[in-house]
Image 1 (tube, rainbow, N blue to C red):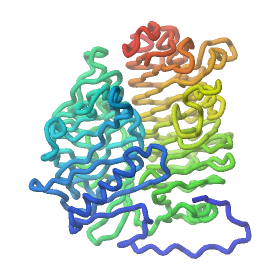
Image 2 (image 1 turned 180 degrees about the vertical axis):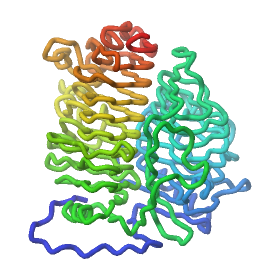
Image 3 (image 1 turned 135 degrees about the vertical axis):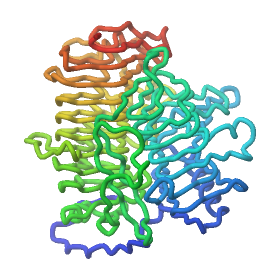
Image 4 (image 1 turned 90 degrees about the horizontal axis):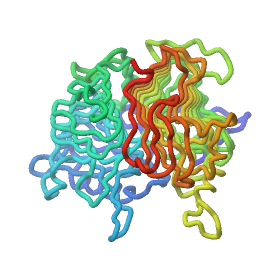
Length: 611
């Protein structure tokens, strides 16, 4: 499954022929129709879940689509579970074109033993549900399990374009404890019944409708452009941050089948100061791109071939799988769409930057995971030139990254300088998890045998300085999750940046305080750093967490570090200790320390600077 560079003298490959009614989407895509026997759907979904429920670091990727119609019934509800690296989506032009009468669920995994079951959702990553209606029917599941549709997930999981009719719980409260969860993201969705947040540490709900309300919150719950959102007046006792409108948004592109049975991709238009779902009055505003205008890639396609197709004006559909990329895939044409299916994954080979997006209006990258490889990369995704003028952006048609995830380590050793580097202006980041792995299958020692410390080995091997570096102006991030990098996790140098929900864990694995001290003697690196020269910046709902398990004596001076200027304003901040290490202050010396003795109890600041 290696994308190779190709040879300079090779003959051009023939043009790809695509049947718009029956496109070849590869072996890891399953499409059900309303005529498919329900027993076949159930058996297929059960087999996928059994294979992927515990396969956190597998290379398998799967996409499951439902053609317009109804699946399940009151007499025989369709109840399925979703494992790792699985996308479940409807193929209608509207979420109301596909209805599942039943349940689509993610449950806790119990990772311990009989004495200590350790049932949690903290590592329920990488899965997606979108573009369908769900009539919740859990009949036959018994007692507690029948009380809701459970979606107990953590980072790199999105719910988009859903119409959920019935109770939804983001926590699985039916297993043994501790039942922790660490998500998550909802956008462009409607709920008619109460949504139970439960044990979710943080969550962003964007441009949605909460008809039945939202119950409770743990540390950092953000609502942006949400009709029926709770009030933030009780902050921090009720840890809600509420924006009546989302400053800039664009919904994720989605695959659909039209009335003639042809496959297309709908590319929603960007919105400004918006609220509610995009589909309430009909088709989501935007443009339709026929699937024949895409190059349908499979793992093993050469970078030369893919880049040639992009250069000739094709969009890119990445079918499910893992693509090893030894030179950059280059998106340099305005309005190009790169859409990953089933958590398609690009892995750097020989230190390549797997994906480069030019300083062009309207390019969209969605549904793609990007992994560092063992040779150090300068970046994993770069938007705009690293050193040059980037002035071709368009605020009305921003470059958009939707559900784009990054990993350094985890399935294998990874090294990069920066994961996501944004140099262009007017870029929208709509939900990302940028993760330097705190665990994985790289082969590091876990028990300290022979004097080897696995955390120290990870610190020395899976190297990555920053998770996100933003140099462009007017960049917006809605749902920015960045964890465990070795210096500042996020560095924001551009003007007029806006972030709606920021979640960060500092690295678990610094061996000594000297490893976690800046050259000027400052203890540690803030999890969120706004450049010293920045004059205007806004953050709504930010949290930095500390768990220095490799050396609990380590101290970090500030969770957030920003220039003290009137135009730099942070609303609703918190730091929290997860039982190891200490953060001395929330921001710029303000806010009390969170040592281990405060574990689980955040230190909050309502506003910085104080009004």
